Image 1 (cartoon, rainbow, N blue to C red):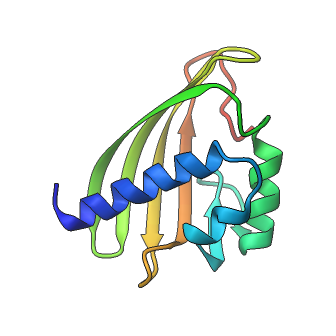
Image 2 (image 1 turned 90 degrees about the vertical axis):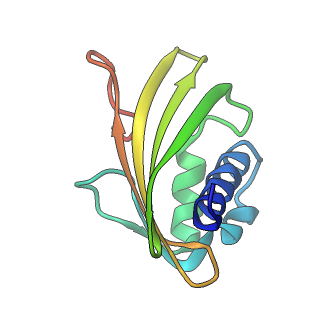
Length: 129
């Protein structure tokens, strides 16, 4: 894997680790202070670290929620990466989704723009609903 893909893989790992960590203090390690975070292609962006932190805490049941996540870097071009993910939650009700992430990085390697495109199997509501 080349350096750019390694940096993206490290960022994805950091995102997952922070999702599994109580609190939101570490978000400044992966997002710029003025980052824009889209939870879906037609959603309004959540803007800035405080707003992202509030959304982050509202979205997860707890930092200890059981899930597995696999990812594949689809493309890296300059400051932009596309990553495909599969996430499976076991509790409280088993559900899964596939997601595409479009990540635009600032010069310091933190995301300045993060866009998710979540997809769920037929009959299951998408995670951002």
